[in-house]
Image 1 (cartoon, rainbow, N blue to C red):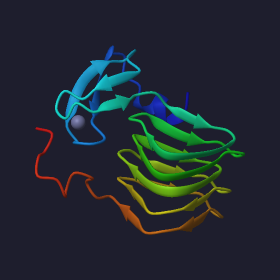
Image 2 (image 1 turned 135 degrees about the vertical axis):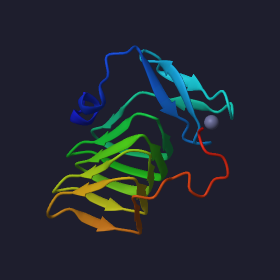
Image 3 (image 1 turned 30 degrees about the vertical axis):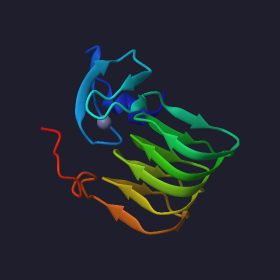
Amino acid sequence: MSNLNEAQYRPEDRQTIVCLYCGRAQDVSRRAMTLTCKFCSKSLKLEDITIKNYEARRHIDTCGIVVVEKKGQVNADRILCGGLVARGRIRGTIMSRGPVLVGPEAEVRGDVSAPILAVGAGAVLHGFYRIGVDPDADRAVAPD
Ligand SMILES: [Zn+2]
């Protein structure tokens, strides 16, 4: 469990998930690990993903938090996530619905969109950063 999760912890057994693809909110059980969006019918992963070694993937998609540990290294075309904690190395385009936390020894190469960014001193960043912008601003339909 990351600190980010604890900060977001609420005692209810329901949570509100915002679809990574269509941006619409829906309630789901806290115990659910996957969800089929009732608006766009895409399947969503809800669990956090922790990367401890080298991993190359085309896409990483989860509504949970992606954590790249110190020795972790990710190569992905695109990372769509509910939040990101980078302590290792990431290469790929990152689109996060929650905060992106970059540790002091992390290296991130790729464009990043996120509502909040926190970067430790000494982190290496290469890319175009779009921070504090509503990811749905470009879309026609708001969640409500
Ligand atoms: Zn959807």
